[in-house]
Amino acid sequence: MQLRCTFRLYPTPGQCAVLARAFGCSRVVFNDGLRARQDAHAAGLPYISDGELSKRVITEAKKTPQRAWLGEVSAVVLQQALADLNTAYRNFFASLSGKRKGPKAAPPRFRSRKDNRQAIRFTRNARFQVTAGGKLRLPKIGDVKVRWSRRLPSEPSSVTVIKDAAGRYFASFVVEAAGEPLPQTAAEIGIDLGLTHFAVLSDGRKIGNRRFLRRAERRLRKAQQALSRKAKGSNNRAKAVVKVARAHARVADARRDFAHQLSTRIVRENQAVMVEDLAVKGLARTRLAKSVHDAGWGQFTQMLTYKAARHGRTLVKVDRWFPSSKLCSACGAVAESMPLNVRSWACPCGAVHDRDVNAAKNILAAGRAERLNACGGTVRPAA
Image (tube, rainbow, N blue to C red; front, side):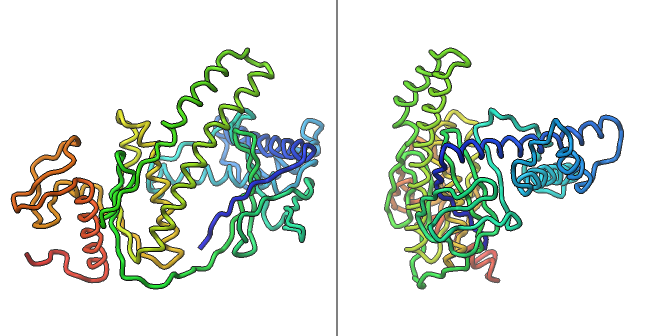
């Protein structure tokens, strides 16, 4: 399976200037290609092919005085910018025709130099390499210092150099990683995700919700207030923008680290993991949007998915309409209604349930039934 391994880069001031030039050249080629296709569409001309577009905006453009500076960066960077444009168009056309599932893909838009995230990509054709001294050698940029947190599982097929809004640089390697099966275990777990507790497990354990954004609100508010007082276009405003971005980056990093540690521990301890398939986008349109985004359920389930696949574990996503909270895990009776303020309830059979623990147990049972159905079991078990 393919994985992305991301590491922090520490370029020198000179290398930062060269990287800024590469970001700009990549952006210009992307915008030139998009403009050429839009002009052709407006004039009623046929769609410009990928090869013809590359010839126009790269090969021929380098010969003109207006675009001669495109030759100062690696040609692979420019080709990959056009590849991103072509992919965006293919996704847009596939979405229009119905071949692409999921949300509708919008047509590609122009890139701005003021975008919070700038990135360029090098493939094997660019002959990038990791030197014996542990630095990343990039064409026409030089050897960039890397902070290695782990070994690469295999030879990378490409590397993307990213600059985020906080002014940090990262190298994201695409590698082919072989499966690393963990020892078999009989444990299986059901997970109920929520806001009062981030996760409640079917064995009764409750993982607290860290509320990373809520805890950092005071620091973020002061940084935003300082930004609002700076004059537009001034150097002090640019510095204040970076301070705000760094404050948000700390929150995102803490949330990501928490999700990594928790998902790794759950995958290592359990042979099968059952989790509810929540509609995060729908919940993000409610009055709980801020808390939903702060929890990071989607990021956590995504980590569970790829880690389970890599380590030979089973992950089952239970349908979001399954009445996990209203269903009695002891007798199977379904309560008529269950408002959110009801945190514990008693079933007519005599069982007293904690709402979240009961939901996690039902998710575990539903996930086990789903696994049996997938393996040829009966769809409707006898009463």
